[in-house]
Structures are given as C-alpha cells and as structure tokens.
Amino acid sequence: MARRLTPELMDDPDASREELDRSLGFIRAINRRLGGTSAAIRHLARWGSAWTRGEPVSVLDVATGSADIPVAIRRWGLERGLDVRITGVDLHETTLDLAREHVVRESESDPRIADGIELRHADARDLVGIHGALSFDYVHAGMFLHHLPEIEVLTVLRVMERLARRGIIWNDLTRSGVACFGIKLLTLGKPEMVRHDARVSVEAGFTKREVLDIARRLELHTWCRFESSFLTQRFTLAGEKPL
Image (cartoon, rainbow, N blue to C red; front, side, top):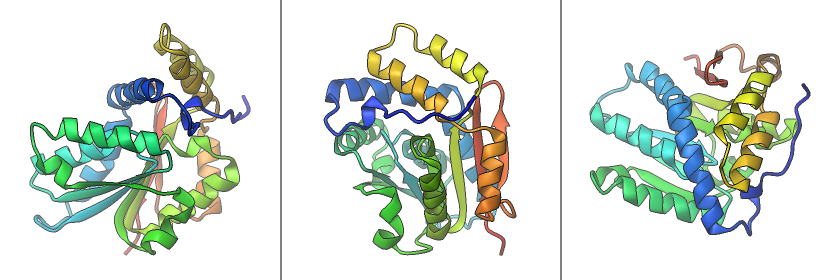
C-alpha cells in the first residue's frame, strides 16, 4: 500500500488540552509496550559501553511529545551511574506544557530525573541554526518523521546527522497490512483523536525498502543499520559515526 499523509488531530495548535493529554498517554503506553522506548535505550546501551563514567552524555530528542522517552533514558542512565542529559524539543506549545507536567510527575521519586531533562519550543528544521552543528552526542527522533512528506524527512534526517557528534536514532512505525489491522484492535473504544491519529500514523509509516532508500540517498547507509520487529511493527535506523 502506498504511503499516505493525513493531518493528525493532535498537531492542531488549537487541539483540546484534555484530548491531547489522553492521546499523549496512549502514545506513552504504545512506546512502553511496543518497543519504542526500549529501542532507543537498546541502541544507547550498545554504545554506552565506550562512555567514560561521570562524563556527561548529551541526547537531543526531536519532537519529544510528552517526553516519555527522555524520562526513560534519564532513568536508565541514573540506574547505571551514567550522566545522560536530554534536551527535548517540540513545536506544539500545549504538548510541551503537558511534557513538563509529565517530567515533574516522573521526578517525584527521584528529583535527579528532572535535573537532566530540558524541554524547549523549536521547529526540527531550525535546530542546526539554534544549537549549531555537532552540538549533541546523540540525536533521537521517535514517531515523528512519519508526520512529514519525503522531502522534509530527508531534511530532518540531515539536520539530525549534522547535530550529532556520535550517532543518530530514527525510531518509527512500519507501514503494513499487519500494522493497520493491529492498530485498529489497539484503539477499539479509544477517543476519536486517538483512533484517528493512530490509524493515519501507520498509513504514513515506512517500509524497509523506503527506509533503506532514504539512508542510501543521504549516505547514512555506510554507518547506520536498519532493525525491525514484526511483532511490534516498529523499526529503527541507527548508528554511530565512524571515527
């Protein structure tokens, strides 16, 4: 099936705060249960064996949503004595407000979580101008690039590559008949925004062939590796830059 882009209700600047909060909660659950969070951490853990303990490691999370992945990365690092500091950026002001509330809640048991997370309003396409090239060790984008037409997917991946000193993680949805059927089951009885956005997100996802073609066109294929899971219908394109 061809990739189809449909505007998501939660991207509307005037989206209801209550509906947006419910949708972000659903995305947190999907990330937690279907591998989005663990995929990001798996790559960082693979690379983290070479990190120097006590030395800060910086991660940029593009289109951070409710900052659930930054919270998980920060917690993972603290449990291992690693000082991983995450900057999360998002263009949606209400989403950022809800993300700040989520970080505060998650930090009640350990204030060090919030100490290592900064949330900022920014457009992904402008990040090199805002932060400068090579300004973060790693750059992650989770379930974001499927919102974009192909030319902007290429643009944002190039921005991520320019921002990263060490590596990047593109963490997103597989587009397939299996994924479409699965998301219909997972959203049965959910609010309209959740049902609509989940469906159109899968329809805007990517096939392995498309991801590998994008990687080749940007010359990321020489140092990034594609990994996917049939069970969760998720994939990553990730790697560390060659020395």
